[in-house]
Amino acid sequence: MYNSNVTSQFVDPRESPLKSKATVSARTTTEPTALTELHRLCRENRIYDVERWIAAGNPLQIAAASERKGQTTSALEIALEARNHALVLLLLCNGYDPNLERKRPLDLALRNRRWDLLDLLLEWGADPKSVSVGDLFDSYNSKLFERFRELGVDLTAGHELAYALGYHTSNKPLFGYVKHHRNDPKIQKELDIALAHHAKEDNEKGVQLCLWAGANPHAAVPDLQYPGLTDDDDDTRNDGEEPFLGWTAIEEACQAGHAKIVERLGPDPAQDNFDDLFRFAGSAAVVKLLLARARPNNVGEILQRQLWWFPLDSHSYWRGLDIIQSIFKSGVRWETDRPEQIANVRKALLKLSDSSFVDVMKLFATESYCSDAILQELGRMPNMRARMKVVGFIPTLSEKSEALDQPRPTRSREVLARFNIVLPKPPPSPLPRWVVIGNWRRDGREIRLTRPELFERVWSEPVEKLAKEWGLSGRGLGKACAKMQIPVHPRGFWAKAEHGHKVRRPGLPNLKPGEAEVIVIHAPL
Image 1 (spheres, helix red, strand yellow):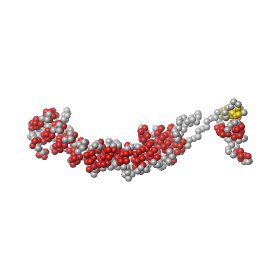
Image 2 (cartoon, one colour):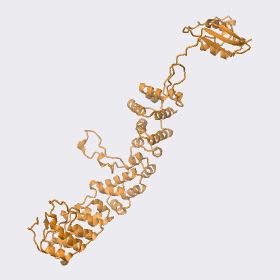
Image 3 (cartoon, one colour):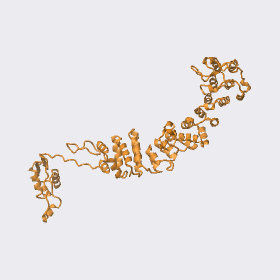
Image 4 (cartoon, helix red, strand yellow):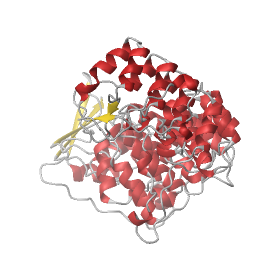
């Protein structure tokens, strides 16, 4: 349906009409098919026929509220795509409203880099706020940036400026424009967001451009990819809760492990929270760089945070182990901490794989890295001791022998000593009924004794003399007696006895029935 309430007066563009003096209203229709002929004339560049179409009072465009099913283009869009200045002017001065278009005319002019058509559209009423800020930035034209800003366009809406600075480092005019206007807090924030993004992505060129433009690496800003993670709405927070403003460029570079970027950004203990930087450090190189500027205050929190990354993958494990080693090798010592923080580290340790658990426990047990009090507090809980038993630090004795059920990790004794874990003495193995002492010889003799008889012989003369008589070593006979729980006289016993000193003789301990009933000694003739 055609809007008949508009004038059919034709405005000749050759007479240089001005928008301020124009009286022609928009010629719209609700029927897309009513414009088919006009579109054909525009595509064929038949301007005089288009003039006759307009003079006849025919519609020029679809009404804003109308359904546009099947409509793929418009007369103004055809003229803009053809870069036809005369046709664009003809349509505009005869009532064509650029603000009713489905596709924004200003964007088409920007994409085609036709500043004359852009001027024409703005002169004839195109709303500057309808422009795509991304297309505007893609023009690489700082004069256009300034012009649209003066027309009231918010270049920072939706972080469009930050996106352009963060993803298009070739747009030098935009960086220059931002540098010129960085006194605007909104523009400064967009620049800081872009810097944090480049720092995260290890883009040295982007970092250099942002710093040149005046970006602040110490400012907490939203993440360019996930801006919704910050707490911009005060109503969503509990009373007294600190809002999360995002991460600084230095924090992003530290988390990503980009040491060169961190060094270029210049972390400063007076402006940055170095404990947080240590906790989230993504590489040993970053840790070394931070340690050159400040020492960590809360070692326990750093260890806890780094340990949480270990289970992710093998890369996270080796990276985290290198980070912890770098901290300790620099001379940092974990000496004291809150009980709850030690408990948090313990929880993180228990979540590690067996091999990771073994490596970290040996690292903690290294002399001078952790205080005895810290390690004893870590290892005192039953769950820690159970895990140490699983990985082999605490041996599991077989019921049949003293052999271990599994190999023990290297430095097991050192680890147990540092964690103040004392192993219980294993129960003695049962003795056989027949105990043989010495080696059998073809030309030798065999002496059979009971355990009480051997006890009497040992206490009737020195062991060394008795052993020599039987062709044994004194040490060998003494070890055999100890195995059968037969006490031997202490050093200096016979010297005291010869000088008349009264010496006490111990009793013979009882064994289980069937143990060491017969003692066979192989002696030479």
